[in-house]
Length: 180
Image (cartoon, rainbow, N blue to C red; front, side):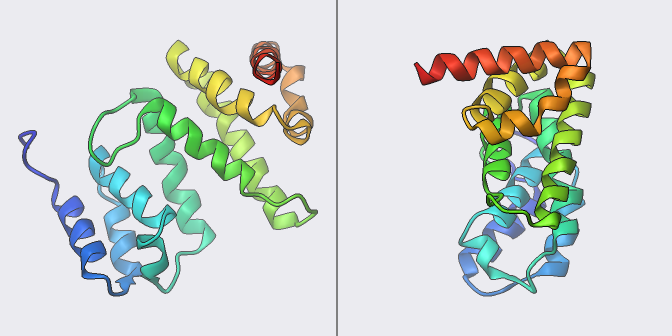
């Protein structure tokens, strides 16, 4: 595909958004299977932000998000892609933080399970990532989260692993520096 040619999935998503009507959840799930990064970026944008996210009928369930977004976000963290729809490494880091910050401050077990899933996913991405990926996680995900004490406590288990403890300390240092 030449730089001027758009992926078919991207074209379909753009047309569905422009049409303004409902977008069938089954169609969105089919689009989620496209392995093209630009298409995945368009799907991520569609399912997470209005006006697209408001038009999906019926709404996607948590499993749909958990199957798609972590894989897309991980690829963005690792590859730092460029494009019209795709997120850069640091752009997706902001989305990951937003994911955590969207969790209300309450004792909802399902919310806790979801952020625990995210925390465990971040461990895997961090441990398997190259230096650029690790730096983005520390400086743009953890450091932003660690500006709130509740997230430092939530990630305190990282201090039990030598490799993760270093990342934890670095993120705390960056968070403290940004406070001053």
